[in-house]
Image 1 (cartoon, helix red, strand yellow):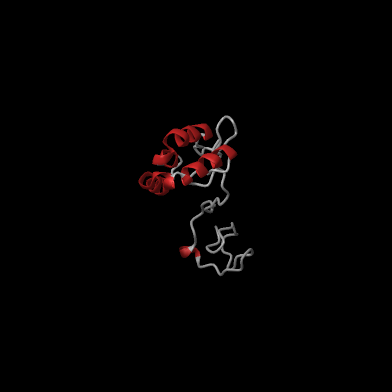
Image 2: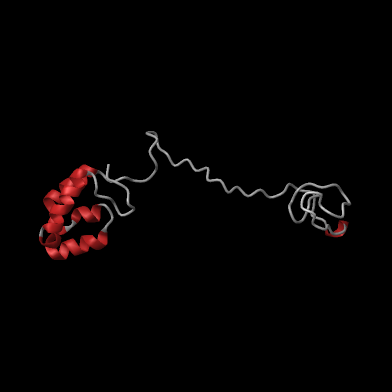
Amino acid sequence: MYCKACGKKIDEGTSFCPFCGARQQGQGNAVPNRDPVVVNVINQNSNTNINGMGAYPYKSKWTAFLLCLFLGGLGIHRFYVGKSGTGILWLFTAGLCGIGWLVDLILILMGSFRDKAGYPLR
């Protein structure tokens, strides 16, 4: 039989659980003889591909750079990395009058430009 409070195996007819001290009901109300439920709280996901990298779809640094170089005033590079809100801003303001376009171009070359999730471009 198993303890109703902690789920550990105890002897038949025991009034109190020796592990947690919980009072046990009579045989009619006892928990049927079965294995206790074990809850696994450890994350055992292995979201890695062949290269050992995570399953996150990293965006290409050079694709973002070329999009920014040729279509930066339209904000296409920002749509590419998932920043659609600022992509729309770039679209309607011509890349913040060219200043935002130039800053993004430099940030992409330096490797400081991040995608929507905050991951660096690869």
